[in-house]
Length: 499
Ligand code: SIN
Image 1 (cartoon, rainbow, N blue to C red):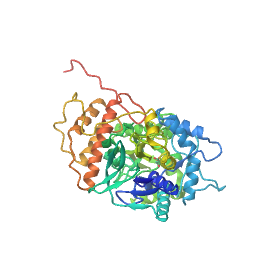
Image 2 (tube, protein in one colour):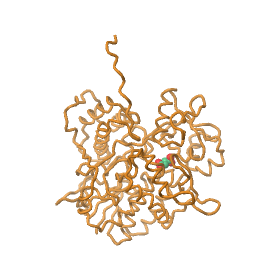
Image 3 (cartoon, rainbow, N blue to C red):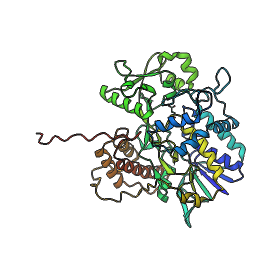
Image 4 (cartoon, rainbow, N blue to C red):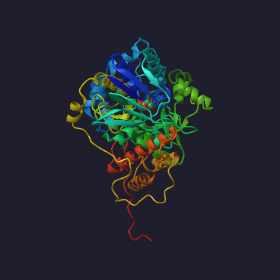
């Protein structure tokens, strides 16, 4: 079977390598270069019940709890049960995980995990180490790779996906197209995601009519350096003992949740934003108690970057703020990656498998890519239509050419479309704290904006961002109550008769 994988993070490369090993003819298409996507930026590790005192059942419970009960238990069981094999496959691929004094894989604690269960490589460089290992395996495999090739549209025919059209017009036929382009962090003015994270796979799937779901659930990371360019300071730093302080030095996170800094990520992110608004300055992440040696050895990437910026975090608490980090929703798939369109598959952050619920548990994303990439490859030969058509699915289809209803007033008065205007609109109105008026305004403005017909990669990204933004905003407007990362502020009371 000819398998075309679009994207080259942990999910795409795991799929490609496994499918190649199973005898398929595999080609990988990536708009940049192998290894320049989100995976390489992941500081957190890969969660799993790898040792004594833990079990897949406990990992599943934590995943469901962090996801605010919205996760799919069947998909979550597949995720946690697959962790040990996924870790072993990465070790086989050459990833060297950090070890404890007994030689076992060292297990770190991150927020909302009830026990330490996160494996790391190179301290806080897990994503980079995994990405490098998989890219090296690709080099040795003979799999065809097209870099600087931007997949723009899916080719449809006789009820199934038959390949892709690249920006510029070239077509590539395939029996199976796998979307593995990551998330859409660049919808927002402030994000931890690298520049190319523009929702490309989700946008292509939307335009082809595939079902998407849970797009209203956007995860904001609570501890991103608030001085200069956004730079992630891993949750593992709080897992190691760092704390959040307000301007008076008080640990405010316990006001929001009994687990304080290690509460689920959505709770901590909201606490950070509210405190920053209340004191009109960023909150502080205090890691001074860990000492310079620990910070250097356990978090070498963060330590080096902070020193490069002239910050000594072993002596001074650092200002932090929230930034868009991860999209829980995406293209609806079953537990093997099949979407609602025969021939079209999705995996990793692009997919909505149901494992991440309404708020992802820390370090479950590299795991999702590794586990579901392998599952997808194994499933490629199984009949598609029978499986896809028969299962019950959340079927949320979203218009990408503007809203179909005209119940809201138009977006007259909005500034013209540009990527930065879109990112500001999403940050202000479809961000971490949402309300009716802001969501309605965002939907109106997104509806009237038009992106130019894409001729360049930047224009294709803009068009994709606009399509995904419409889907995210309309999903957020449609979910009228708060759940997980989707938080709606109560309407303000109107003062009747006020002067
Ligand atoms: C982090 O290192 O804090 C991020 C890990 C993750 O997103 O799971």
